[in-house]
Length: 273
Image (cartoon, rainbow, N blue to C red; front, side):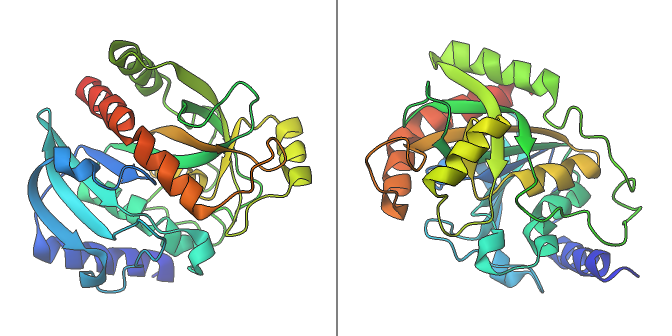
């Protein structure tokens, strides 16, 4: 058996010993949404550390728990803390949680993150719906022997971000009084922030926002047949586009400030899925 799939299957078997919950929607919480789970009618909580072989979040503000239950009658499993490539995990471990939630039954993968704004029209506190991504700067999670149980060898990436779900997010933003931006997200490996020259390069390539997550999860989710959507909270202006130096605390503070509206947007979107 493929070692990546063997590990995934072992995590699935372990989580099934803990719960028989079958989610409809998988939600990955980025910075600033850590307490979003307070909005869930919780049926159960599983610590990542309690799943045999499962990667554990080490990033600040990422607790490391699966929380599952219902929101607006929809069965949801929520990642309270994600795993990043910069934490030192192989890319197969970074996308293992998304694949695991798919195996549990989730048909929709809703990704959120904090991102640096490259588009000059973006300001900290804005929200950007992902309409496309650039994946060239992080390892592709599909490299290696294909796992046919998950998907095809060469998946099409024309519409990674499901147009119908994107329309629902736009409707949710309008109802919530949120000026929702749209754009292309690019994932870099981190943990260092990008240089001003790198940001100029990414802008030339067509990126509107940059971060250290999400794209590899979107690729893995799309590969295994999930309908994918995503929203970024613009937490800062990217390097070289303002006089301010970038810091982890700035991202956390901006995420916390935007959290109430971010939560409102996500809940109103989930209602419509």
